[in-house]
Image 1 (tube, rainbow, N blue to C red):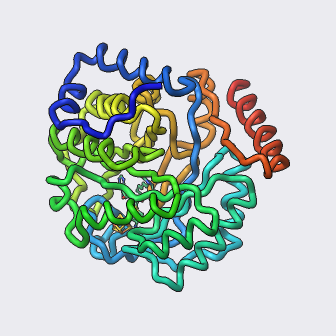
Image 2 (image 1 turned 135 degrees about the vertical axis):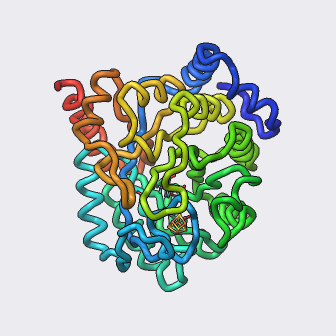
Image 3 (image 1 turned 45 degrees about the vertical axis):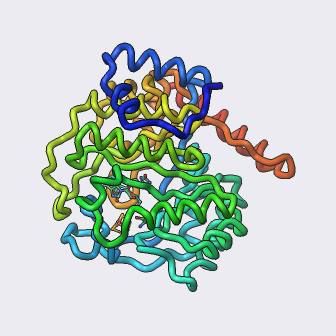
Length: 343
Ligand code: SAM
Ligand code: DTB
Ligand code: SF4
């Protein structure tokens, strides 16, 4: 196991990001192989349980009510719809189901409704994740009691670039929510977006802040901006692909035990670029045709990519009191691995 550090300086992270490419990849591979099965990738499926109409002003987001992006505001989905979609995700090979809501923060009356969804998804033998905006300490406790394994709340950018992207809540609000999630005993899923016009130093600042949190997030999503017409960030100069791979590699090196997720933006990436990201230490993806409102590669394309790269879907740890569920998951995952290798 590598040493877990929480004292990374900006210059150290910048130096890693700027290594000759082959040296960076070799170092990231070494850390990856010391801490993880290099041929296993964790697969999560996303579902937007409450779409659009969001009061916040995140400049990247198609769900902000103030931008004309064509996303229609919808009400919270019914429990049965969520369960049906979770079953489908599981049948397709996902092991984690992440429910996203276009909220600034949940209203207290929404929490029991989401808690019921969490319980039902967990009963299917899936890991649960939710991303609902800012949480109070009490809301975090209630979600944990319902069986929520992970809470996704991204820092999104370096502290000094943040106000260029979001003005309706500040960086400290995000850190506070992450604190409530940790205190409630849930795992954190926390990363950011690159390709928003930030500098390399600001990418280093995002990674440095993530790695210097009191605990490394167990899951670190690195999103490449999905440019959506109507959002202020549409038309931003595209991030150079190798710079994206460098960001993944640096995340792997400085947060050695975390799962680094190659997140939004895969639909616009070639298979070769994704393979480089896996080599750089990414070991998690969003799996299924849709992210929240935008597209993701089809399941068949991902199964084919995994098969060509010899990657298998990671299994999940299930407590010993859920043996039947575990057996079911192993059976289903074995089927997925076989389907993926018999093209
Ligand atoms: N409303 C909640 C919040 O913002 O905390 C939860 C849902 S929000 C859509 C979750 C995350 O999705 C954002 O923090 C951001 O990192 C990511 N995201 C949203 N739009 C994106 C885009 N166009 N490209 C890449 N990532 C995006
Ligand atoms: C994360 O870091 N990326 C996901 C998830 N967490 C919730 C969201 C990506 C959203 C991309 C734009 C959309 O589909 O609306
Ligand atoms: Fe709302 Fe979340 Fe989109 Fe920001 S990222 S506008 S909070 S849905």
